[in-house]
Image 1 (cartoon, rainbow, N blue to C red):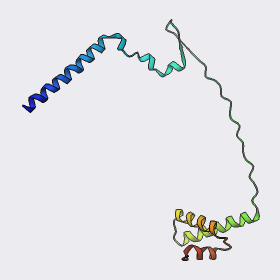
Image 2 (image 1 turned 90 degrees about the vertical axis):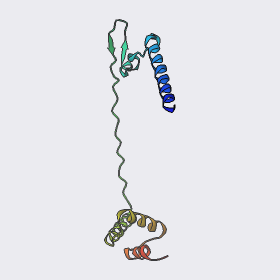
Image 3 (image 1 turned 135 degrees about the vertical axis):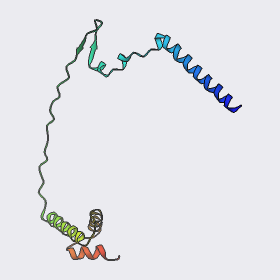
Image 4 (image 1 turned 180 degrees about the horizontal axis):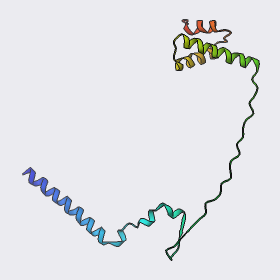
Length: 128
């Protein structure tokens, strides 16, 4: 009984699908005009004669590249950069990976005024 009911439902679904497909196929108002969906409609102007004229693309002005003049760093900034690089090399030699090294350097230099590498290592590996 169950199989017969499933078969009847399948036949009804197929029947209504085919009926809708055939009625839509016979009705010209429901047909899709492919030319309406072609991307080239934005570029071409259609004429009634079936010929198309192509619009010339607008010429773009080249952008001017502005290069910022490098600012001279003060002696204190240069010394701090060198100290940070030395601390980074020390952590790498002690076995820290790159991501952890950057985190530790940024954390300690933002919280403390570091004067030398030994002070940095004490703060980095010491317990607070």
